[in-house]
Image (tube, rainbow, N blue to C red; front, side):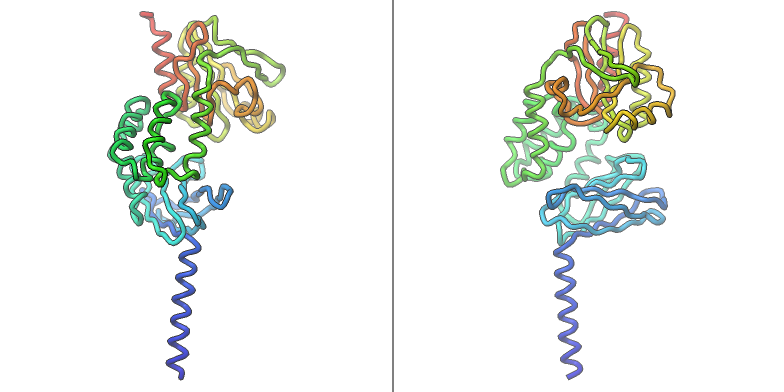
Length: 333
């Protein structure tokens, strides 16, 4: 009798464990360099953006989440630097190796989609890090040969620069089979493409606040002009360095425009650094009528214009924006 009861108990434990596994996912891994640090995790599931905080102890970490439908998890350090991504749903386990110095060096195991995704990023790290048309071409080549693979959708939505080729992104999206492009991954991209396709190619006068009064920014009338839109969370050291280099280009005008939630937050943040270029704040960048036709889908975002206000670059890359400005202001032009 005792053995029978023990056997039933063992079966119930196994069933409970199975139910538990089906109701959550598990992510474990290691951060190169063996740091002891806090990690922030975010993913969209069950109609809302889910967040949690976990700890890496001597580099090792583990956490659990709930995603009935496959979701992209993003892992950040506590300075909001993206360390790695994975694709996972309930009942699955994922193992990640993260390199704080190189996002593209992420290694993933445990499910095929995350493994193929991370393998592509490692294999094409140099071209993806450069960005622009070369990165887009590498992604387009993969999509062309893998139309039934959800990794094609992941590459298109997370790594393809639609800001420089919205029509190309739209065509690639149509190439991917319906089963491999779930709406949870493509809804944001469709919104972005709609804004980009209808965007104007000329930057007209914009209204902003410099902290004391309303001012206007006009690209025309300068050899070149840059509108840089960011906020306190995405304003990295590399962006600040690029802005400093843009500011040093003779004959150009640079406006760094903050999209922080309120002017008070922006004032506090602005007073903490010594930037000497033109800076301002405006509300509701994504929704304000004056920005509606500029194709802005996220921050950071850079728009580089020539002397008549025609856009020669718009997109999320400070490096590509600096290259475009340098070309416009080079001495042989």
